[in-house]
Image 1 (cartoon, protein in one colour):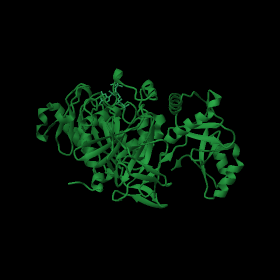
Image 2 (cartoon, protein in one colour):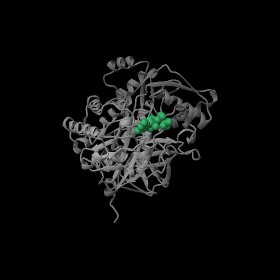
Image 3 (spheres, protein in one colour):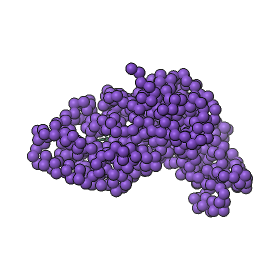
Image 4 (tube, protein in one colour):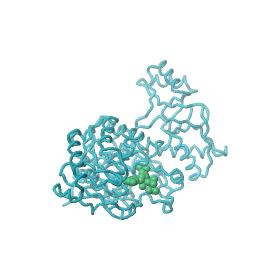
Length: 531
Ligand code: G4P
């Protein structure tokens, strides 16, 4: 029997993994895809060593730095659910990109290194999830290595994140003495068997022994320790409460070893059983605040990321479109809220590393829309053209640089290239009201390097980024358009426009902004701009 679009949507689980670099996000991603049957050999997500291929020129930077710069989405089925895993870039310079990716996720998995606990980047990403009340499942990874005491780890999560913790499992030992974990809800014991990293042993053969048979896999001392600790954990930790998890007040905790394929199946089961289907999204319909829910008939959704050069043979851009309602069919035409119609004859679905044509998609799904600059991050698309989504911000850049071409004849060329990157949301481009400078803004130094690399390889243009006379940018607005205009007119030396032509205040320092703000109470100086 075929399902209704609403039923299809409610079996979607769209989630992201957040972690500090090196906690094991890539390894866990690989193993989730393996367990979900989406790939058949570990190592596909990130081929190691020599096998690692360049999929586009600018990925050279990824390779040199050993970090994952690009975000992508991977879809796989497990049991009766469709999982859309949004991969978030790990490096802190890409927090803006990560932030936007999280706007498209309905839940998150937080991966911690069992030896390190909460690290700085974990904390930052968690804050983003909290802002949006995204429910989080915690996966404490690397239990096959010497770990911190699990009580200390849980206490740290509770203290640093102000979040109740409810362990679903309790581990026995760690490192050489790691034996597995008890399912606190059933009393069963999931047995850890040491496997080599490259052994293609998917979690299907994970052994679970019944509550009464744990003594067959643990010695007396271990069993006594497990009994005592598990009892204590149940006494001191919160009991798992689905509602509290969905509201973002409580995190269920699973222990495991991504590298050794342990705990991954349990994580998938938790996502399957507990993680929420697509959430209602805040939007405006014909200017009226509205929640877009799964029962809405028309196709709606928003673009949360633009990526260029995914395939070096096609110089296309892919807009990642997160569906929020309706049934999308290949060939549909959707409209932006500005009334621009976009034909979508060749949408892309992301099945692990393969790209295939999407015949249909439902709320929660992410499809790639190839385009040549027509779509921008934050654009809402719908059949009626009446829906605009809220809450996808542009961050105030922390670094401003003046860009100039090495060859002065190529200024126009360079502007076009920088506009393209700004459209993708990689960086910002500001044009001061006076003069012909191009000021680029980025959240971190690495973005500037990515930009230079891409301008060079995609446009055959050498660009120099120099110290700019400005260090801070703020978006200007006012309830009174006349006052805004007057401010802009009388501050021509320190205003400019962004890619959309919206006014921006350019200042030497935050102090400077504060001073001007005080003098102009009717003008708002915003760090971010919401589209
Ligand atoms: P990231 O994406 O969060 O940055 O982490 P990634 O998966 O790349 O893992 C970082 C390192 O931690 C890798 O080792 C990886 O093999 C290791 N690792 C991940 N999960 C586990 C685990 O459960 N147990 C153990 N013992 N190690 C784990 P590497 O030496 O940096 O890389 P590689 O040479 O293995 O590729």
